[in-house]
Image (cartoon, rainbow, N blue to C red; front, top):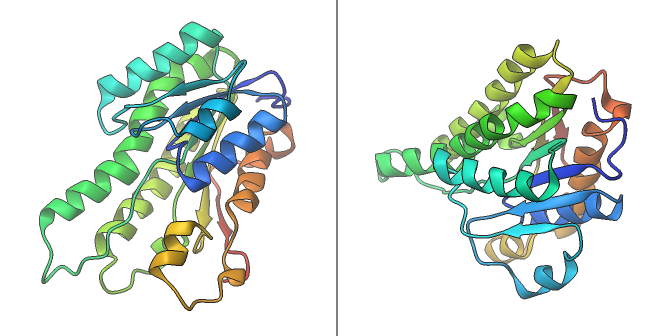
Amino acid sequence: MVNNVQQRVVIVTGAFGALGRAVARKFAASGAAVGLLDRGAVPAELAVEFEGPHLLIPGVDLADSDSTAKAIGSTVDRTSRIDVLVNVAGGFRWETLESGDIVTWELMFAMNLKTAVNASKAVLPHLLLRGGSIVNIGAGAAGRAQAGMGAYTASKAGVQRLTEALAEELKDRNITVNCVLPGVIDTPQNRATMAGTDFSRWVAPAAIADVIYFLASDAARAVNGASIRVFGRG
């Protein structure tokens, strides 16, 4: 296990979004070097904020194993190690089965599950050298799907099963694997799409980042294969 996150190397996928930024900031504030991976372009404010030991890698198709492995390799070339992986990358689509398309199911599995699989597989050789942690982002909604959320919740349920299987696979090899299940996250996009809702009941990205930080620390060395609900007051 990682005894502490200071002077460690932490990979965050989907790092340019609201939750990914919060996670990257939490680890960077602790003294860790952070590799920020995302499919999009580097936001200007992050380019300024994450200088020094950090590495921003845009244009990474995490649903593609070769693209993911190349990005992870670039991080190792710079840092010589990886201690923590946080799989934040993902997406959401609302669509009923009757009016929808199988393409949506393929997209959700690619964005939410395949990205976590590819990143986890790419970092494993490095984590196995000295131990470490993987923290996945599932979804509280995956516990019971509502209409129009079949593809999304099925893919996020897959993230939980991946977490459990990988935790069992690695439990005797000094690596922990856990999953965080957020409720509705208080992001600008969610506020725009759910206007009129009491935003104060939602969970802040920084609060989720605190839980992720804990799971990657030595304080959580006895926690493995867990799925932890982080709902705020939702």
